[in-house]
Image 1 (cartoon, one colour):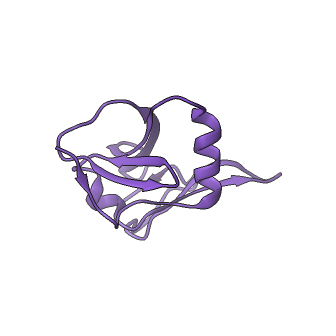
Image 2: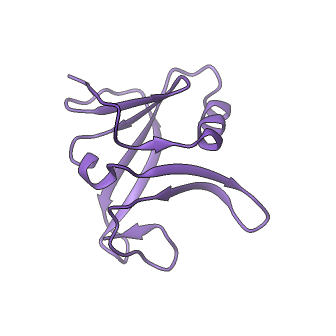
Image 3: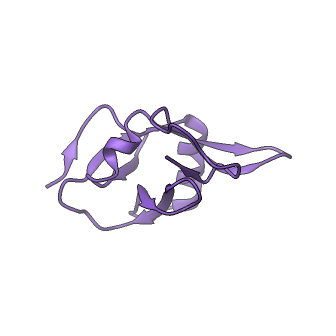
Length: 110
C-alpha cells in the first residue's frame, strides 16, 4: 500500500528538471533512502526504482515521483533535494533540517 502525503521530501525545480532529463521516457521513480554508514552514522541514497514497497511515502513534482520508504521517511521529513550545476560543484544536493551534524564531504549525517 502506498501512502500519499503532501509533506515529506521536497524537490526543487532544478532537481525536477534534471530528473526528467535523466529519466527520459522511462517509467521510474526517484527513490530517496537513508542507510547506515558513512563517518557520521547515516548516509543518503538516491536512485531510480520501479518497485513499490509497502508503506512507501510518495510525493509528485511536475510528473516526477519521489518515493521514500517508511523507515527513511522520518529522517527525511522536510528535506529538500536540489541540483547544482556550477564550476564548483555538480550533482544532487540534500538539505535536511533533521540532520544534527554531517561529515566534511556532506554525504553522511546523524
